[in-house]
Amino acid sequence: MKRKNTWKSNYIPTYSMHQSRQYKLKHPARFFAVLLVLVLCVYALMVIIGKDLDPAETAMGTISTTSEPTVSPTPVPISMAASTPTPTPTTVPTPTPTSIPSPTATPTRAPSPTATPAPSPTQVPAPTAKPQPSSSRVKDVSVCIDPGHGGKYPGTVSPYRDDFYEKDIVLDISLRLKKLLQNAGVSVVMTREADTHLKSDWTEDIWERPKIANEQDATFFVSIHVNALDLSIKGAAACNGTEIFHYGKTHGDFTSKQFAEIMGEAINKVAGTKHNGVTQKDFGVLRLSNMPALLVETAFITNKEDHKRLESDEFRQNMAKGIFNGTMEIFETMGAYQENGKYKIPVTW
Ligand SMILES: [Zn+2]
Image (cartoon, rainbow, N blue to C red):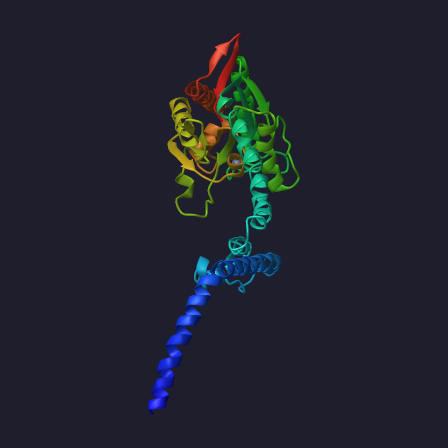
């Protein structure tokens, strides 16, 4: 027991004192130099390995990166990868040096310059939109008169007299209106001037009428008709009067309803029929015409009083006069004025 104690007591101090003193004095500089070299080598290896891994990661575009948890929690990249696969690889290369992210960043920036030319064509419509407000152009006033039906389409037929058809009545009124307008210095376009249909197909025949008005760039379109009711309906024969139809469009600062009301009042002053007001309705001739358009149902061929009116030259002339007055009032509302004997009008649509 005593020997062990003596041995320990003799040995330990001498050894520890001797070793510690010698190690601290001789090798600190070498030790740290070697350590520094090792650290640099490890760092260089990590950099080289990192360079080799990054393209693979970008190619895979998946989860295997070690930097992901540091950038963002794992559940987020999954949803990111599901929605947009491309942004995740661009966020991943953050541990790698600046050389690799920059090439990957430039292709991702490439679409943005391609996107910048895209807004410029979308900005192109702006100059094309500028002429439109300035399209408050002044043009010669012209009216497209559409005598309804014609040819094989007689329109309504008199229940009281043979061979008395709507198509003939409205053509006569229309030709009277044409004279009134032309005498006033207004250009006139007629959809028909004889007992003819425009198209053999009934629907196409209707479509052709506003098409003519549009092609001629008319300022105003008026379609002239005669009304009728099924006399088997109780009280139908008692229905009479004049009605103005419009589509409900807007033309610059005006509405087709305004124009219909002007027309209705003008006819009511001279025609002698009951004024049944204005009605909005989807008639093809109104829907398809580009300019302000109205359809005038002059009177009921199924009502005996109106029937007499429709037979008379006086009524037809008065009706033509009423439509003429209404048309000129509409033009006045739109700002028409006379220049060298012709009516001109600023068009804001
Ligand atoms: Zn008709």
